[in-house]
Image (cartoon, rainbow, N blue to C red):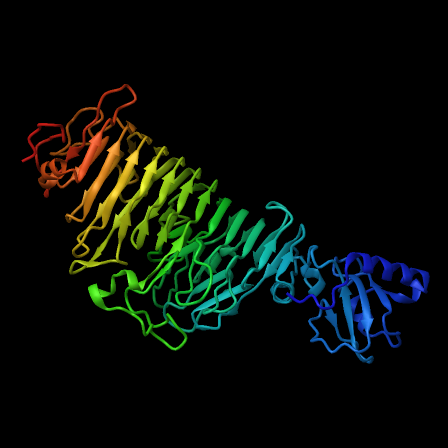
Amino acid sequence: MRKTHCLPVEAVLTVLAMAVAANAAELAVPTVADLQAMPDLGDGDVVAVAGYHRPGDDGGGTFRYDAASQLEPDGGTVVKPQTLPGRFLRVFDPQGPCLAEWFGAYGDGDGADPHDDQAAINICLRTLGRVKLLAKTYGVRGKPERWNPAVTYHAIDLGPGYRIEGSGRDRTVLKLLSGTNPHGNGPSENYFNLIGNRDFYESADHIVIRDLTIDCNFDGQNKQTTINAVAVRGGGALLERLNLRGYGTGRNPENGSSRECFAVYQTLVYKARGSRQAATYRDLDFTGCGHNGDVGGSVAEITHIALGGADNFENKSWILPQGADPDWDPTNNGENENNWWPSYGGVVEDCVLHDESYDLAAQQSPLNGITYGDCIGVEVRRNRAYNWEGTGVYVMSWWNRDCVIADNEFTGVYAGVALQASSLPGNKPNQCPSHIGTIVERNRIVTGATRHCRWSPLGIQLFGGEPGPGIRFRDITVRHNYISGRAFEHADGGTRSPSGIVVQIVGAIYEGLRFEDNIIDCPDFVPGAWVAQEPGSLSMTFYPLERFAEDVQSGRVVYRGNRSPEGKELYPALAGWDYKNAPTYGKPGAATE
């Protein structure tokens, strides 16, 4: 941060008093342009400027004339005169707020003819490391990112230690202006981040973004581009008290490309020196994603919150500026500790997802809430989702250890928590999944009538394919959760009944699965050869039946103390390979073959 020309507060007051005692009328001008045009000043003179573009626009201030200064002009704190030597240096408290208006921001993004303020905001950040945004709407447009300018665009820069602070989440707005339409020059080149790293290989560590609304204004664009709100590559990020609006998943009609939206995400720059602390997301409010029902074809999903570390399991070509990582370890198909660069800690708490539906006429993107990857010790706690046709916590793959999902409330959702270990054709791992030491506890999950979702709703799911050899789920504990749901009529005319806790893992890739003391209120059931036609038969399900007896005997799977609200002990309904077996529960001593 540049501080060489800042005066202490006491000195500022002294200088101002001297200026008033002199000829204050001659040392006051309306705008910065008038300041630059002043024809005659003495070294050390102080000039009061009423505004940047016009008086009272919050861009004015007090400037001291330094006849010998050769500092690089920045247009806000160092201003070059038109005819005089030296510089005008803004006098301000180096510990106080720094305004984008000092560098020419207008804050008229909600007007009929708005200006774009990203240049002023970025100069303020580059010069002072922080910006205070007032109770205004700041319109922004995009610019290509350095690493691959044809692929990804962003508007506001993030660098190490940058702070972007508004004047209140309902008072300050950063808005992507209509008609920006940032797109690339070829297939799949359609990503836009409203706030993103200023450089691809620089780690934007310890950034802070708080107290404002970020409006991505998807519906004001051509909808070909996927638009994210905040993309942080670096450790130790703090995002709090934010409203997120208008993010969305686009589709390029020329090639059908649709890239997943990550409304807010944090990851690491793989080989960069910097913090490896995962982000803290606190009190974020998500609603009003963009409408993509008119883009045609299929569109990718929206994941609202993502955080994590990094990995190089696949010898990626972009790991370092010079290309692939020379230290890449190819053993075990690259899936090993040497190629894992996790983030540590991290918290997602008190965030709200609400009122978003999978509606084919308006919003076609499947919805995911919170995800994390390549993490050790993340806590996902006290988050809420209401009337929301998506999954509260969805973790598909990646490496994760010792993470906790607790005390969340997900009501009216397709699914509460889903941990998956997916595979690709040929039994290859999809993103090398590994879930170790995960605890899912004290969550309240109520499934909703997700009428357009392809599958029936569920409370908590463990799903796995056959992603190659090895254990992919280890020491997963699901306990003290409350799960409830009722049947409903689907848009296709059929009836869907929710399941409470679902284990559907094809391969023997798990050990230490424990389901204890959960209360499950899912009385409804559907016709099916393997489904007992009685209330509560879908409270818990396990697939495949053919492994259950061995799994229980070996302790690989434990069910204990799970009950209905009335106190009835519950056992998992077992499904065979073909889902055609007679109804049977995984009770002690029950036949399972």
